[in-house]
Image 1: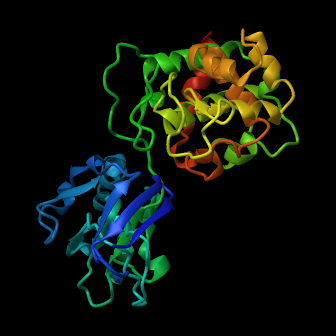
Image 2: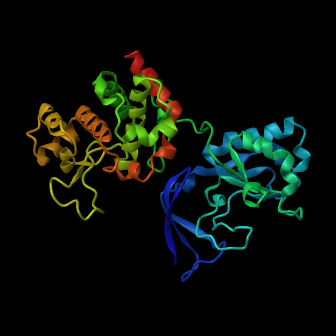
Image 3: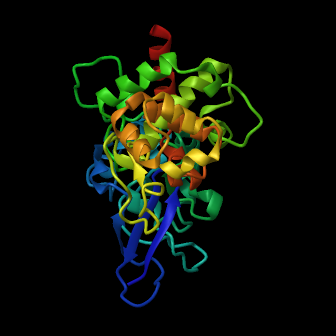
Length: 357
C-alpha cells in the first residue's frame, strides 16, 4: 500500500499509508504511522450546533489545540446574528486523502484527517457558498476559508490560538507556556526547563549577538522575530533549545546514538546527548573544541560524548554556539520541523525567567 511522508504546517513531519494496497486512489482512507498523535483529537461541545443536522448534537471530534478558537468562532457567529446561515454540518474528522473539487488526485492527507477542519452547508447546491456570511468570523479566529481553493463549505485551522490543554500540575508555577506539548514528544520536564533558564541567565553575551551569518536566527526570525534586542535573541535561543531537545531526544540528557543512522558508527560520528550533536561537529567552528577542553574534556570525540551527557551547561552552550555557525547539523531545524512548535508565549516566559535571575 502507498506510504508517504510530508511536512504539515501545524504538526511537522508525518508519515501515513493509504488503504488501497497497490495504487493511489482519490480520497482514499489513510492511517498515520508516525509523527502525529491522534489521541489529541477529542470531542468538543459547540452549543450553537446542537440543533444543526449532521453535528451529532453539537459534539464534534476536533484537535485539542483548536478547541478554543473553534468555540470562539461559533460564539462570534452567534453574537453577530448570522448563525441562521448554518443549516447543516458535514462533520470534522475524516481520515482520508484530500479530494480537490477539480476532481483531480491528491496524495496529501486532508486536514479533516488531523481533526482541524469542518464542513458546513455542503448540501446547499453550491458547495457551501451559502456560509459566506459566517466566513469572516472563522478567518478572524485563525481559520482558512475553503473558498480560496473552490471549496467554500470548508474551514480549516491556519494557525493555533492559545492551546486549551492545561499542563499537568508540576508543583512549579514558573512555567506554563513552556510546558505545552512539542509535536508527539510530550511536554518538557521541569528540571530541563530549570537547567535551560539557569544556563541562559549567565551564558556569554556573544552567543546571542547579531552577526552576518545565515544561522539559527535567520532560520527562525519569521516565527520568533523580528529581533528587538539581545535579550529577545537570548530568549529566542532558549526557545529553540527547548523545542529542539524534544525533537532530538525527548529531553533525555543521556540519549545515545541514532541507531537508524548508518554513518553513526564511530566515536566522532556518534550522536550524543539531549541535542544529538556528534564529535565531528567540533571541526565546524573555531572554539568548539576549546569549549570542550574548558569543560573538562581532553578534546577527543570520546570525551565529547561523556561531557555532552554529563555536563548539562556544556551541552546547552555547545549546541547554542553550533547553531550560530550552521543549522545543517540538526535535521529537525534543517527540514523546518521545529518551526511550527516554536511559541512566542514560551519565548516570553523564558525571557521573564532570565530577567528575574
